[in-house]
Length: 362
Image (tube, rainbow, N blue to C red; front, side, top):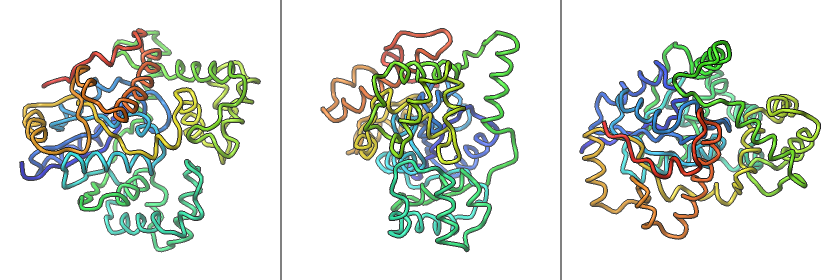
């Protein structure tokens, strides 16, 4: 296979913009790999559909192979999310990384990446998971020639983070098309379920995760310390607010401030509940799980298994026996997150439901 390309994505849910990105990435790629978030996404929320259902939609959209960006990296802030996704792309032998961008300006994105990687920026941005607004302010201050559109775009900021870690990978920003975004689609689905009381597609109910995290914090003896994104008073604020509120929805609404965004608060609560430390997040994924593939993707998997690969590729539960101690520790941590996700599904599933699943072959 000549050109192996990657797209790092969430597909939460898939929309026309994703379809356009996959179409452009597939045009001159012999194999297109989607490195897709598992059951939890970057905003610290449950994905609206489980990882296998979303993986199947990615193959229908043009991906040849879908592998998992596992928890906790799937739910981390932009830098860790980007670094882990790019790391998997490199380990799988990809040469190009395609991603959505409001500006489509590769030179500006690479310039922003150099600023993000600079000693000056890092010295002033030490706390893991600082609010995004602070990052954008620092970027504008240190590099005033950056386009304002880039600084105001979450996708371009993520694209700049990708560019920090690419090494030999070639970045290919694809200008986003005007379409209904994932947030609006999720809101529409939730409203329809609320109005009708019906959930024929099996969408995951967000309020269930909020309730679980609220109960966890409410019942804790003290603020849980030592977990990702909980520094700077974040976890103490969540803990104190949980003692004063009566529901998960109230917890995150009342705890949010300009400094503590909803996304950071949700991530902090989720990481504390599952026990994710900063040291865990600073390691790179030692494994990935195959979620879906077509014939081209299966041929690629067969070829890569004949070569040395820097990550273990899991296709079924029996592969667990081949994992080293470190790989198994990461795998079990991700599986714990999946067991939380099953509590939020409709209907609720057993804790090990995902552990026994095989990839979807199309």
